[in-house]
Length: 283
Image (cartoon, rainbow, N blue to C red; front, side, top):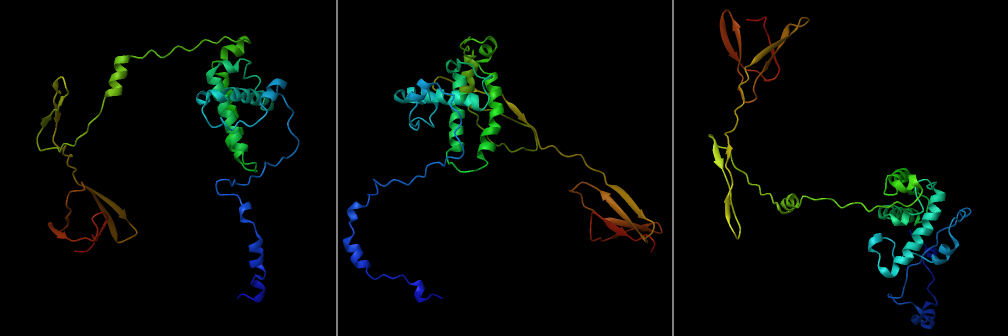
């Protein structure tokens, strides 16, 4: 239940509103969401960046982040290269990757893509500036695989020879005829009902130049399952005055139980066709 203390005092509001300058409020187009800078925890890591590169990279790289490196517009490409080198120089020391990356990494497109993707991933993991398991599960656990991929990249020869030995990989030698066949092939599927006897089917295909009839294919009748002869199994329970009799049969067969007394077979009804208790002591 509300009380008088719960009711706000509105006295004097009319005068305050009359004196308020509403033109000072930003318009919807001008309003920007408030942002809280990432907290700084602990001391900064030591810098391992070339001084000239550090000067060139003074600023945010948000104009090209999230774009494939090859697709970055020309007017932003220099900034992207500068930021990537700055990040790589730090990353190699911080994550102990110096033995997996050579000084010619920027001349290897596959390596550039790997390192740039890692830069973007690291930025995404730490972007929120809040404690979470993301850095451990999404980034740190990714690094061992990254190191192995870098060692197996086109830098492999450069790592062993300690110098740039880049050879552009040869393009794939395609079987153009096989490629065009795979590219242009369309599969059509229809359902054909099986009949009691074997039938043949074929299809006619035509285009602007010619008409072609396919080879024929035979469709046989429905395969009839082999008949399953009934098999009687008896499970004797010596401690009881009854036995369990089971029959194994085909699921479509009918079952009629019979019992013999004094040489004469008599039918009888049962409650279950799967397990039946038959009294054998009475007549």
